[in-house]
Image (cartoon, rainbow, N blue to C red):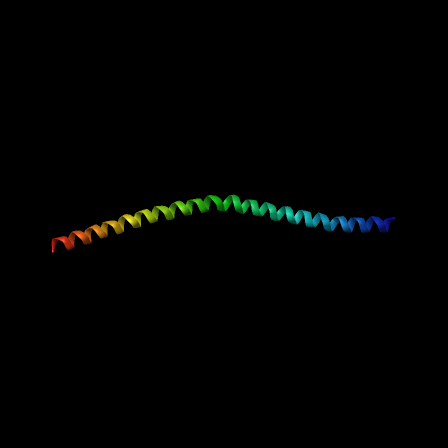
Length: 72
């Protein structure tokens, strides 16, 4: 009887460890997801802003070059 209980505890113990480990991994995954999503959104906004500024600069340079060529 005591040996049966030991074997059941050992089997159940390994299952609990697996369950706890998967719970920890799930929690870490959720934490990373909730942390990285806003950072990713902020990065997208920053890149879009930089793209807009770069486009305006290039348009200004293009207009400036066109004006200089027209004056010559």
